[in-house]
Image (cartoon, rainbow, N blue to C red; front, side, top):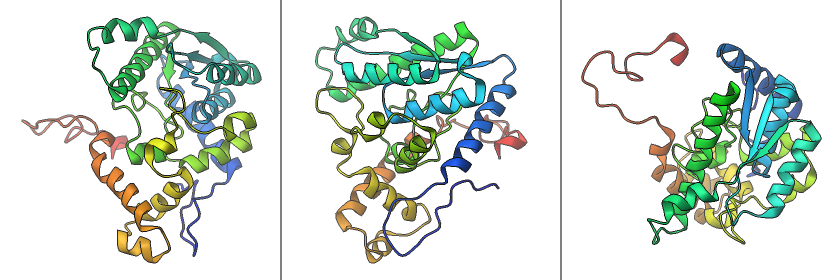
Length: 283
């Protein structure tokens, strides 16, 4: 198996590193190959939030397919930050890709008016799933493939909406930790304003990813790099990681394992899909 990003351990507790050139070239070919595999598709469809993950994905898709074949969508809710919309515009202008804005406020409020007691978590999930509905419908209209933007840190910590952020059939960033996405963004030339701003799901004023998670991405990535190699909590602490940080990461990884799997199928035959019925490429 080709290894583009190495997570070999050293003697410190720093986040994992990345070779920007190698990763960018590999992911460019990945996107192009996946589009070619689906013969009915000839373009990429992306939700452009104004954050670094979707910006890096847009840059990679433009490299792979040409800017004329990248369709980006700003999908703001009424409370979305105007600066996020501006940052998304900056990316689209820099790349020369298609950009369209489709507000989701009416669709979201059309449902939530019947759920006035919905808390921030539920409201955020409704917004995320509504955005994905739009992207899949636009992909049907444009003959494009929805491309995911979630990074490995979010996926491992369960910091995403099931059947929303993780729904697109391909995800170029899914095996890159957040700190590696930042490094790749710098290599690709993503505007510094997007790289340097605090990551946020943009659900309410002042909300940040790291505030929600209770740990910085840098500390989480450093722990995950080692934890995913099979080290237990005691071993992580002996390597120099803070016990409280280890507990935060372990709790999130263990409690969200179900979110990283397809729906569980009740097996009634020896041809159950995704259990027994697998093509060679699925192994």
